[in-house]
Every structure is written in C-alpha cells, then in structure tokens.
Image 1 (cartoon, protein in one colour):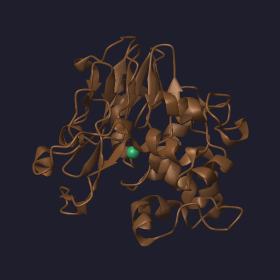
Image 2 (image 1 turned 60 degrees about the vertical axis):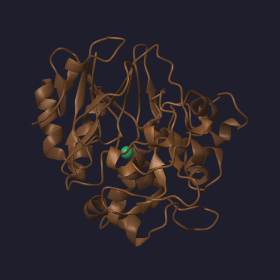
Image 3 (image 1 turned 30 degrees about the vertical axis):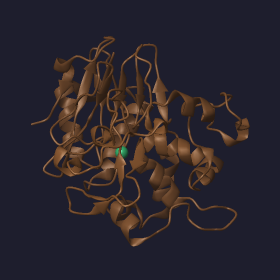
Length: 315
Ligand SMILES: [Mn+2]
C-alpha cells in the first residue's frame, strides 16, 4: 500500500509535515510507517524552495531503506543536463543562460560551490526511473504515453537499438541524456512527453497572455481529457486566458489515451487550488496557492479508481 507524494520543489518543511500527517516517523535513519506503508514520490524535488538538499536527503534515505520509490521529474532531468557535458562538443547539455540559471538558482546555491557534492547528487538523480509500473498502479511525472514508453524502454518495440534506449531499470544513461538534449531525436521527444507532458502551439498569428502577462503561443494540453476537442477546452489554462481563442480543433498528435485498467498518479500540473482527480483513473498531486508550492499526497490502498476522500492536503 502506497502514499503518493507530488512535487516538492525544495519545500522541506512541507515535506516533513505531510510525511508526519501520513503517519511516517523517523526510525533507523529514515522516515517509515508502522503499518508498512511506503511512499511513491513523483519527482521535481528541487528548484523553488531553499532546502533542496534536505529534501533530497529525506527522499534518498527513504529509498535506500526501502521505505519509498521515486520517479524523475523534469527538474531533475534539467539538473542532469545542466551538469553533464556533450563529449563530442565539450558543451553543457543544457545551456547556462541567465533564464535557465534563474530557474535552477536555489539548487545551485546549495551545491555549486562543491563540485563533488554536485556530481554526487546528479548521479543520484540518474538512478531515478522515468516511470513506475506496479500491479495496482502507475506513476510518472507528467504523462503516461504507452507508445513513447515502449519506444525508449530497454528491449521495447520501435526502431532504436538497445544501446540508445533507457537502461534495464528504466533510467537515463549518459548517452541517452546527450541524445535527449538535442531537438528532433526520439529521446528528446520522449523526455518532453513523459516528464513535461503534452504541449501544443496556437496557430500562426495567435498569441495569448498568461497569468503573469507574458505573451505565449505554446500551451500545456489537458491530455487526459478525451472530451476536449477545441484548443481552448484542451488548454491547461484558466478560462480568462483562453476566452478569445479561435474555435479550432486540437491536433490528433496531442491526444493521449490512458488505458484505464489501473490508477495513474502524476505531478507537474500545478493546480491553482489543490490536488485533484483529473479523471476516474488519473490523479494529479501538484498544487500551489498564491504562487507558492504546496505538497500534496494521496493515500492508496489498492482501489482501482481514484477516491476523492483519499487526497491529503496541508493547511
Ligand atoms: Mn514538473
């Protein structure tokens, strides 16, 4: 039986609080539950709050003591690419631009002065699988796309040789990270879809202003909503942001059908209010209030459909 915990983003106090609320106590150098329950973390441990190392220490010790499992989030993927260099060019896989540094700032503040520590943590990020599939549930950071998973899974279907896929534990190899940081590769498309979800563009000539007033044409798609036909219904945005959008349909490549036989837990899609069931089988555990991250959880005990009363919130 598992307690699933969504995006933490360096908010150590909140992580501690939700673990306590779920019944975990500090025992033998890791948090554990006296009924034998375990945690599944949905990734995005870093960037945002200022206690990234404390979060990593807690999650990592729970995994090492077999009290938890975890998947990788897009922030860990970006952190790996910030650190690693392409052996062919000697350049970092993720450009060290001002805006990318800003997104990564609180984590860098804690590790950048100590190259060995930085490397050690990046190496740990590399041990996080991109997804978890158990008998009763699935977990991934942003989007379960079976075709994409099969195309990069070790000895899966599709045209890639095994040497260009994930390893047998569904984790990144350095070679995979190099490929994935280059637009247009199978690996790049896979990481985008699995860890960042589905995005679509407004047609040429159209832009919209997001809640921060920034002009955009790319938007996140509510890929789990099979009834969303028009772009504006499919956008993971507030009504005010899509009001003036053209009545155009969403492209077929932006649709993902999730097989409903087991519940799926995702993070990544920050909800203005709180974590919620996106469908009967898909629960999102990322939430924020007034621009701040709030850690949310779900207490799962074998049910096949998401039960509203099993979400656990702070505050
Ligand atoms: Mn994310």
